[in-house]
Image (cartoon, rainbow, N blue to C red; front, side, top):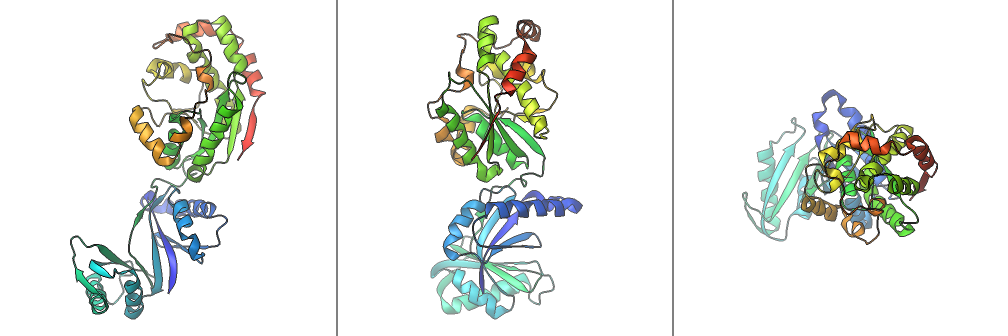
Length: 382
């Protein structure tokens, strides 16, 4: 008898002839999540098994597995030979001491001599011989699960723990996220990583108008996201001079709109250097003045890469709920300003015309300012 952790994947089983690619990538991500813990990872049909780990590390392994995208569910289990006596021995370790129970069998090995119903009845009867229990097939206090595998073994366990779902990170290519210190962009990172995209981070700051605490806040956000995304690098760019020039020469109501166009230009250059295929933002339609369809169209107009906005249809309450669930909310609400609050106009344009934006932007040396900002690019590893 061996204690193992059973991991079941989510959408990968739908991938047909391409499934092997997704399984291998999923295994790589599991190994990365378990780095530093002694273990063996085995792939079987539709399952991964973690074996050979120190028992005291089981909860830590659960925590790490729960953040790996592609995991549908996981269970602490006993792996035993598939003979009835071995199965009963393990089932008694899983069964409760009192109350109600039932046995539920899954036979991956259809050649096994007992049907699922026969095995349920036989193991259930043996448990009743040893324990003062009652059978309740509709609403039992505990279910003893038997999973008879094709390789002559069986897995016995008592619960399914919910995984993160989604697809393995890296299976959908690479994107560059414009991450601020706010609530929205970290949630966007989590959501797009869940769909299998590898996320790179780019943060814009306005030092000395924003301080190092604001930058460290973003590093903390990225560090919190790392178990989900696997990314441990943040790149930052200063847009201080760009903002000063916009403030000095352009219509004040366009301060944020023009700044975002510069951000997108810079982000596209960084993305191409990182081989990223898209830009990602935390924008939600109508949430602030720059996030109207006109504002979004203005930003899109200066880049050729696609721009993904995972939160575009979410309201603020929905975003906050997700931020709290993934652990970024308490960091996001720390009182450090980001660059978009610098030189913020009293009445920002809600529906700016693109022709007016381009007319005001013509007052600036766009290429020189963009190149100057690129010279401030800093890489932070955490």
